[in-house]
Image 1: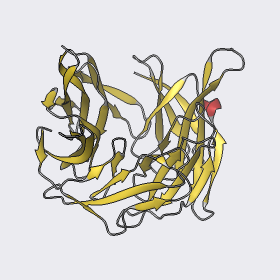
Image 2: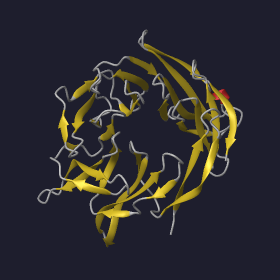
Image 3: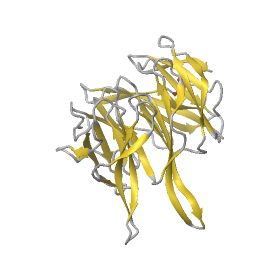
Image 4: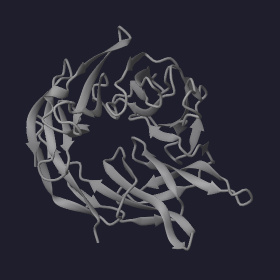
Length: 349
């Protein structure tokens, strides 16, 4: 029984027009809590939570499914289908080589019943997308720490969850990945203190040159960018910082493939229709020479209430999703490569 489905689209590079692939991928899990793709265009969906419950006593498992994408045709093919891993895993991430998948496991102490958290590694089978756990030395992390990887280097990052709202800096651990065994080794300069705020929601630009992060737990939300060196290590001080509209006017952001345009999305009240909301979208343009951002409110380019989706790989086209989902719910925009401004093209199938 399929509870959800996934569909694929091919993008016409010149126009950005989408052609929906005929296959629909069934997802037999009723929900999924993680969605991650690797460097070989495989997609992994996971769900974790209580299973096999008797009264209040439950075991906690993780169910993983995978989709394999044909890089020539774009077709989706089934890999794993709701395979049960008998531990609870969170914060999935995969490296650019497509060899390993990483996640955080909670391990309960038999005496004090207080869980500890460790990074686990899984080798990915190139053909089937199946995963097999690898034995690597324990790497302790926090329950809410965020795992993410560099887009081109065998480097894994752990951004520590803030101890409190007023914490002055964010702490980032940086690990090199052994591409043969999946083992992690903390780099000599790690951990790094990312100054200027308690940064969260990390995103690395496609070229690996910039690390972006968002301070959303304060009364003055901000966006920061840190320069990354050739080894994937960030500078401690941000290259540039800009103030953002407060929540809910800023809820998330997307980094353009050129690494220097950032789109901040959120919702604001509709003054003409009390009780209703409008989409708010800003483009922030990084000027590295001036060590600053310029910004522009481009909400007027949007034809309705939309949420951000993604860019094409060249960054010439931007896609947003209307609510509710369904045929025609993806909206296509052309991206001005100089200013980052959007031009609405129309709905896609």
